[in-house]
Image (cartoon, rainbow, N blue to C red; front, side, top):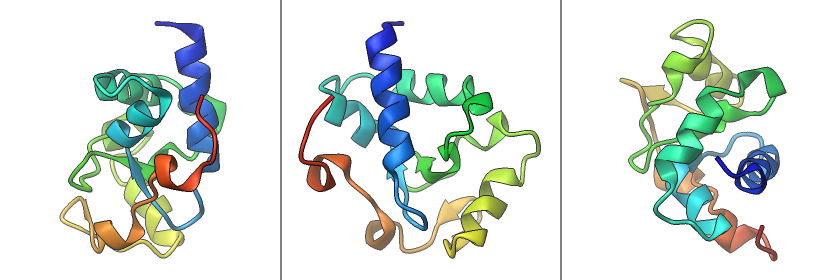
Length: 110
């Protein structure tokens, strides 16, 4: 995996606002590699020690597909709920409203 790609993923994840969520694909697209959403997920699943708010990254449908990477299966959901994000059946309620798109919000690319 390209180190610049990994750093760009980490830099974007650090910018996801409290109480908002984004998707693996939105991050990949913003970096300029729209076919790399799985690589984004892999990086986040293997980088929890970096203290990133990876719990704010879900799949394109708002499903908590990354929850298995956390120490407990409920960690991702509990962190989101502490930020006011409602989760039901492993899916973000009001996903479209809470969705943070880095390509719309950031005025620069990585």
